[in-house]
Length: 138
Image (cartoon, rainbow, N blue to C red):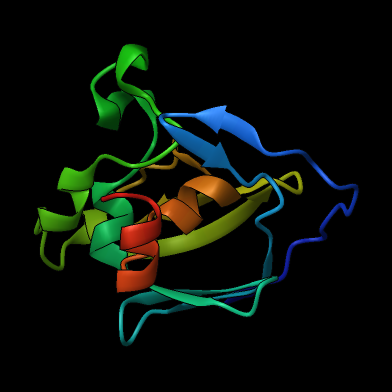
């Protein structure tokens, strides 16, 4: 499965949020979902590659239901999502990926859940690599 979103290119300023500046220019140049390895890969405009286990994406679903209400929704994932183990179930198997404008995507899970809108900044902040874990303070 490959999704290549059309990207708008007007520069967007840095915004203050949750103790650091958020780079709203974070844009993917390539996105793949490998169902065999259960990995979702994003190549970013700065040439960084993020590899997300499907299980991590589901644990970090940004929808109000998964976050426990609108008051718990944040621009970046909670640090605890990196320690949640969900296993291989229909809730952690990707059925489809749908672009949301030029700023995000929605993942459709095999259990039917499709409410989370993963914007580019949220996904970059969710990158499990040591470099981004240090950068985003999680």
